[in-house]
Length: 433
Image (tube, rainbow, N blue to C red; front, side):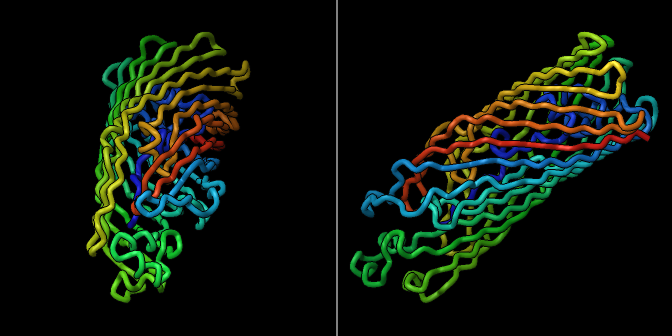
């Protein structure tokens, strides 16, 4: 009766926004850069390139637009197959603010330490409470906070390596409607249900589930300087397992109390196990000219770890199981930088293709109506002082239309198509001291 969702995303809900500077070139230079302290996250091997101290503070506004267009959504055929009532949910995209802070400290000419605080996963959306897909999703809010201390060592003048430890805190809140009319027909005779006003879509309850978890992981990377103009970088971030513990509450309409022994609410402990995926990032950059530099990277994410999401309850409510069958994904990016003659300005742009882990319409969730996307980004850097730089960037994500044909807990089918797009803006300050 409760419909939960996996708290994981990369073309799903993974948040790439860990550097405004890198956002400007679609993160194509992330595994090879040592200019801002986000290397703690992208490639800790680069930290030993820093002299002195480097502090990077950034904030991003992520504005997704998500609209559903109904096709033939209906109740379970055994219950009449009537069209689902309600609207199309409005713009389900929720405005997100994503901050991150990174710090790198040189210890010796060969050793450096770093610390990062960021949000590597997160999503937020909400539909109108009376929309057609209310039995599968109304509000979804999932956030993962990550603390990442790291250490880097310069083996030679050309090769540096680094590793870090991750402590993650996950919190989630998910809501949806419950069709007690459909539940009645599966438990009692149609005559009894009709006499109580318990028919499909006529006796909706409301379910809410909250939970949190702490998980642990690690990351490591290496940076190799092939020559003064060319760098190669590779990094790995581990999977992180979360046992999400929380509580589920179901508000029951008055006429449905016959199904619950007179109870007007059900309270239960809930538990969900989920593993956020590991990923590998590889990239290179090349200085074509004192004024021009190009970069490219490739990222693989292990989304096939997530086959289903099973939520267990302490009460008589049966386990909720969502069949996802997510697939591994690839992300490809390329970017270009232009350096002004004065050295005070840098202009950049980038393009990326980001695959979705969703294998098809029957495995697309109303909570995460994800599809493959194309990034087009622009950014600039301005040197306020020799040791203080400001970065600004903007990205627009073009997303493929995404069909959905998903069955819910009461057997209803949500059928239609999603249209999605995302706008992202960010500002960042780098301070060397």
